[in-house]
Amino acid sequence: MLALLKQKSYRDRTLQTLFVGGLAVMLVIFVMTARTNLEAQGMTSGFDFLERATGWGVSFSLIDFSTSDSYLKVIWVGLLNSLFLGVISMSFATIIGIAIGIMRVSGNKMAELIGTIYVEVFRNLPLLLQAFFWYAILTTLPKPRDAYDIGGIAFLSGRGVYLPGLNVSGLSVFLSAIGLVIAFAVWLNLTTSRRFAKMMPKEKTARARSIWLAWGFAACVVMAMGRIPDTPLLNLPYLKGLNFREGIRVSPELLTCIVAISIYGGAYIGEIVRAGFNAVSNGQKEAGFALGLTPWQIFTRIRLPLAIRAVMPMLINQYVWLFKATTIGIAVGFVDFFMVISTSINQSGQTLELIAILMGGFLCINYTMAFALNRVNDAIKLKGTQARG
Image 1 (cartoon, helix red, strand yellow):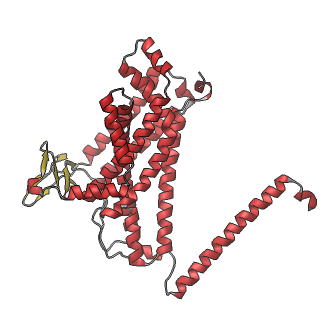
Image 2 (tube, one colour):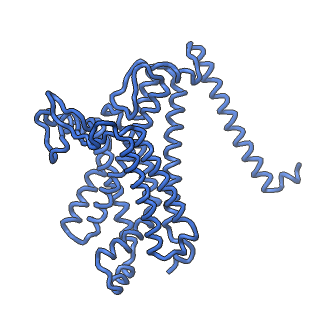
Image 3 (cartoon, rainbow, N blue to C red):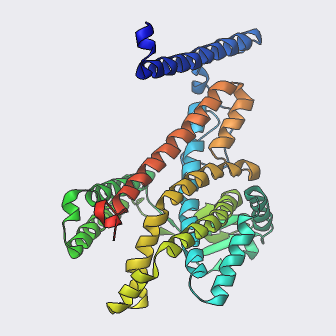
């Protein structure tokens, strides 16, 4: 025994085992104590409550939901709503952030001033405060009869934004989304393969373009086949009585969350993008000019790709944070994952189980997103001796 204790590897394994064992014992004690306290208060533990009817409805849902549906379904509704909000908000935040980052390094004094003011204002105001500000503005817009007309196809009022929609089945939209995920996975696998790295630039572009064109064609076919019979493919909103009919209504609560997260996240992403542009050396830009490239070609083929490569790890962290920011929906009444869990706790009393579901849901989503984006980072980063030059 003394001889074993003198071995560093044995001591390290022993300490690690004792540490993990101690954590396991503490977890078991915590679970047993919690169960004892719940039984003393007449509360049952477990996940059987997920099959019970909720008895309450939701104001926004991407799938059909009624008060007779179960807790499991309402949790699924909240999860889908958060994913929907996260995808839209992060997309707009990325567009805004890239635009602000370009303005800050454009060399134009006015553009740099506007970009700086934007970053300093929206980055230093709490996200919750911004959500209240935009919600107050959106709910005080005119009534539907006096709504702002946007090109005759969209309308902005205090009841939300009314946009054109598609008369297609939900299954068609789902299949198109699945197709997009598959196309992205195929493209990512192609770009990380050794065979792709040996291709000529034109062949690489042709291969990648063919993947996205194939998905676009397949999506159009699926949408056409899934069109609701005897209806036009495009569904335009129109005013009838005191409200709009047809089209898609974006509620003030959802629009508030999208605007607040997009603008707030855009300020941070703008600074990240600016740092990426500053990381590109002047020598690379001068080499582009020496080769006769135009300023636009230098920007799209040299500065932007190298900037994205430099800041991709920081962007991944920012995207994970932005998705967690979707929980502000509860402050303005949007039915997101966090709000559904909170309401379910108040109605069912199953606090520990529902908090575990909330934590597990966010953990799975953020880990999956980080894993996918890290794969993208592996595909675009410079490898081996390419990083030295």
